[in-house]
Length: 120
Image 1: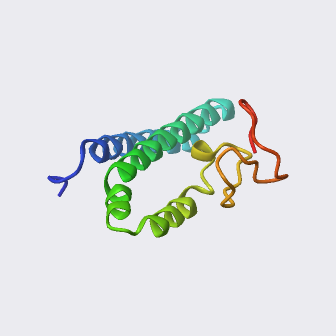
Image 2: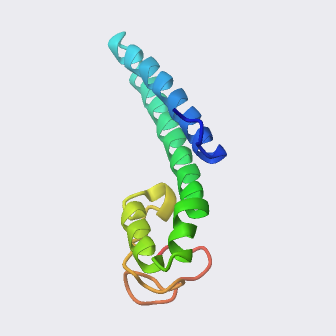
């Protein structure tokens, strides 16, 4: 297993294994009645690590599977699949983003063009 993983997939896998250990530590904290704020901070750290792993997987997907799909003439299907995969991922799309198929730079909610620093 793992012999033909890309460097990015291997990095994501390593991060996920680290998260698993971190999560076990958080479970032990809760079981030992640790201070809630300390637990919350650790949960946030795990969430951040998972978001980073997800970004690495996205980058890997774009470089491998997505690129191959575009070259093979399956670009539109690959785009739709990717939009479906990231639409509920705030770390990738922003907390207020809605992927609706709107043109790049076009706000998804009111039709107004998005400006630098704005979130559609």
